[in-house]
Length: 471
Image (cartoon, rainbow, N blue to C red; front, side, top):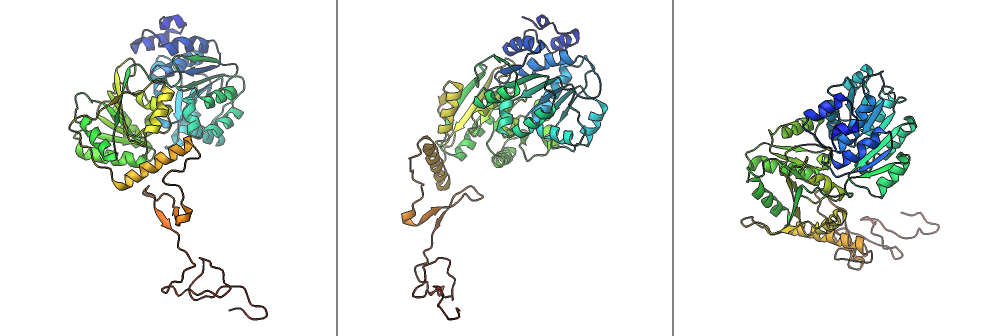
């Protein structure tokens, strides 16, 4: 099958041909004819398989040309980066048309977005929060929407966007075509499809949460954080092989620490993106990485989905993701467009539980490899060891609620587990018993006084005598 078999117009076929694509991917082959017929779709496909074009080509064919002022189609995306990526793809595929489109998202002032909306658009790409804000401000008219697409629906649910999506569904016309695309099809996605879609056709190019065949996976068991750093440096020094790398970490703090360390030790340019970075900084870092001016990009999961960056040679999971579907999206940043890529994961003993869950989801084991010779394996600090043991205890409690573990509350010994401190290191607080006299405090108790730990020095406690003034 070729794209000409879809009966697309000449403008779209020319754009596809200029991109160098001759044959559609499995998800495109299955989804495009149904979407062109106006059917509601639930599309499941692994990242990097052309999922975006699978709904954009029918959408562009349906909109055809500029008309009116208000948008006739809307595409919702969970992150700014994905919204920008979709808008860029519309520019590429619709370059031979006069279709007007705009991406709106948070992180930037709405003034420019309001001005462009007033000029008139045909296709709107938006994050749910900014779309609600502009609608409530009266700058967005939705009564002419005929097609609505939810991209990365599972991520939108993970990020808590469902209330905004439901509010939008209340103001968008009921008579419309709906398409929902995701890389995973869990129970929540199915529930959302029942609420959002009408008699949908499920298009599943690959099994849900399946890793791409073009991605080679490796896993290294490491004892601690410092050894992870040493192993990462061992690979990154091999510049010829590791020529374009994304390092995924779990938190913004770890991202900053790894970035600063690599920026000092590696002679190449290193960039970092996470939620605390300004929008312009994130855009500039992404563009520099796409253009090949940056070899190493350190990122949290804000960059794990939807970003189409070609020629990524390696993806590192410095930390194992605790949202297991994100593993598929992370490693999907490499091995795109039939290119071969490699995904390397570092796992401590506290992360082994999560890896077991991930392997169950992707329905395959991740091959274990020994740590290469010459990589320094450091001794685990006491505090880090305690944190890992505590996490393992919590994991075992989730599997077995009756499990006590080594860190359960020991009331008979007078110890109480305090909440985590800002540094992430838990401390133990000792309960001070108030029934013992302390010469330093000068604590005195009346004969009938209750033994209260709230007693203060120099005061007598006990029942108030009848008929006498209590002092």
